[in-house]
Every structure is written in structure tokens, then in C-alpha cells.
Image 1 (spheres, one colour):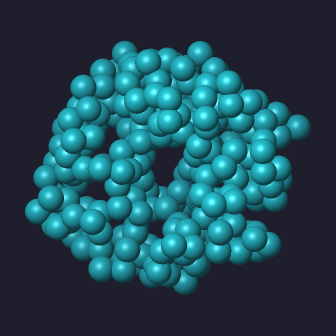
Image 2: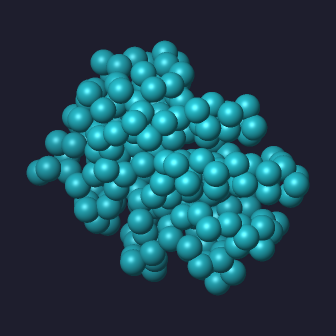
Image 3: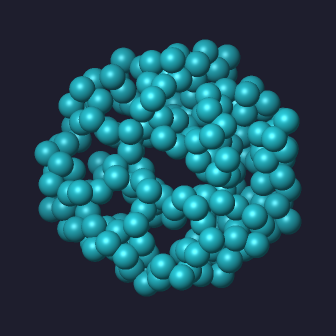
Length: 232
């Protein structure tokens, strides 16, 4: 069982891309880590390029979350992916998480030998939220999936949608994202939304906690809350 955090969970008190932030999660006992690159573009990439393999020592699973590429033109996307490919040669990411959008040019992504994964979208998006649109994506771009259970909840609080996705995409799912939902990504220990955790289809998959925490103490509490659920 590999449980860990997105580095962006401590953005209120820590630089998400600093080695000190990785050390916090390592000390906490996280086996998995997702590098948060889902806000900006080239500026964040320059910081990511400074990460050393030794900074990530001790984590069994490390992924990176790309920004929403619909905010960039195709020339910019190619340049960013070229940089990520160079970084990946050193850091060996297990997954590069993508937010799909309807006009996505998948030919761009086929140019790169990167472990792309497709994440289901939340209520704010117009595409990639439900089984049918994800089936359409996978028919065009054969890739693993990140099942985001917070996103499922925002579209269907009954969590039937999460069950449908697990049944439809079962073997394609390679990573799980969890967090509570009131307005965005609240800690589960606070929201007590057990239905989100209960929707995890396979506890052997890497589980990334995306809950936004106020400080390290709160992050520790969230980690223990999720871990204890998974252990019992």
C-alpha cells in the first residue's frame, strides 16, 4: 500500500517544490509523492528541473501533475513536454498526470515517451467528467487513468459515478486521488466524508491525498486518518 501527498497540499506554509517539503512528507511516513506542477508553466518547470534524485529518496512512487494545458498554445505545450522529458530522464516519474479537454491534440503527446495518465474532471469542467467522455478519450489516446474521487463526488455525491468508473476502467486505473469536498479540497478528517474513501476500488494502488492543509500538524492528522481507514 503506497499512500502519500501532493506537494501542493502544504502550499499555504511551504514551497511545494522545495526539498524541505519532500522531507516533511518523508518524515511523516509517506510512501508516495506527487509533484505539484498544476498551477503555472515554465517558471515552475525551472524549479522542478532543480530537483535531484536524492531529494526524492525513500518514496516508492513519485508522479507529477501537469497544469491544464488548455491554458497554453501548442508550441508552449511541446516546449514544456520536452523539458519534462529531460527531467524524467533523471527522476523517472511513475506518472505524468494530465487534465483532458475536448480540443486536446493527442498527436502532441504521442511524440513523447512519458508515462502519461488521464484524470477524470470535477464539476467545473465541461469535459472528462463522466464515463462516456472518458471512453472517447481512451479510444483516441490509450493511457492509464487517475481516478480522482473528490472529482467524482463533485459531480455525483452518491458516488455511483465512482463505482461506474471503477467498473468500466478497472484495470486502466493506476493511481487514486482523494480529498474531502465542501468548496474544493478540504481535509477528510474534517469533512468526515467516508463515502469518498469507501469508493477506493483497490487499496493496493498508489493513493495521493490532495487535501489542502493549513500546516504540518493538520497534514499529519489527514495522513493518519486516511491510512487508518485503509488499514482497517
